[in-house]
Length: 143
Image 1 (cartoon, rainbow, N blue to C red):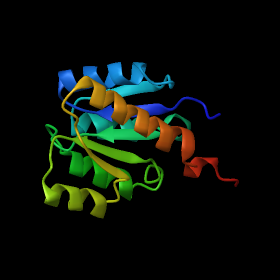
Image 2 (cartoon, rainbow, N blue to C red):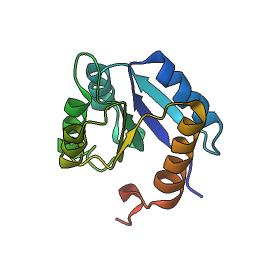
Image 3 (cartoon, helix red, strand yellow):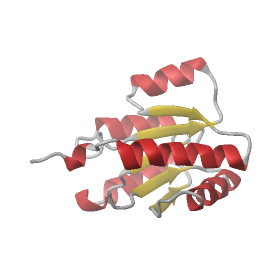
Image 4 (tube, rainbow, N blue to C red):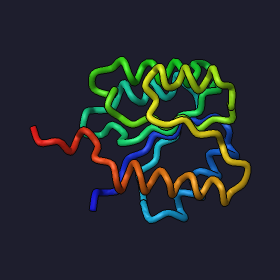
């Protein structure tokens, strides 16, 4: 079994942060979770992490103050040390252009924020099952 992950949640809405944190508590993972409340804070966090302390998963809202989620995603995927981190877009936008842009910038998944707690919990369990428990992340490859 893999160790529990370090997650960077980039979200400016306190209610959504609380829902996501509560949903994670219902899962079997116990991640170390950092929260960045805007795009500038997220980029600063990522720039100051050493290779062994970078997050193993980024959950990113698109609609952020200071720098958008698109700008954060672009930063992550252009950085040699960060580009392999899975990025899940978790946003309220259902705009087809936002979806296309996210995947064009190599987001790993695009999810629309659920309307209630049970649905948030289901999303977290799906992320846990696939990205944390099932997928083989690039950092597990033999060197």
